[in-house]
Length: 112
Image (cartoon, rainbow, N blue to C red; front, top):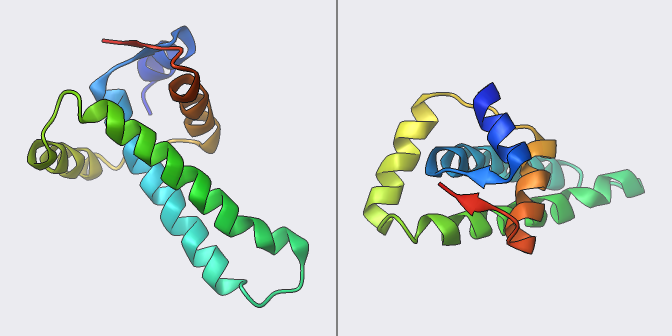
């Protein structure tokens, strides 16, 4: 994620580009934790039991981002924008996604 986007997130400002990149990041973590949950589903170690919870958390974050993006885009436009953003090979940290969740959950942001 670009530094300017990180600064905007810290300032509580969101743009559609930031939201699209966070959508892609959430998808990445959903896939990661779905894989790990499947891999360790029969494990007796308690640290392996958090993967389904983390996957559900990122599904919730993606849903919140989706609600905000549907205010500006139709479903077809959103699919096209997501495909464009995926081609950029962006990476978003879990910390950034958790910050995004807090902002969206508390409605503590300004949409540019």
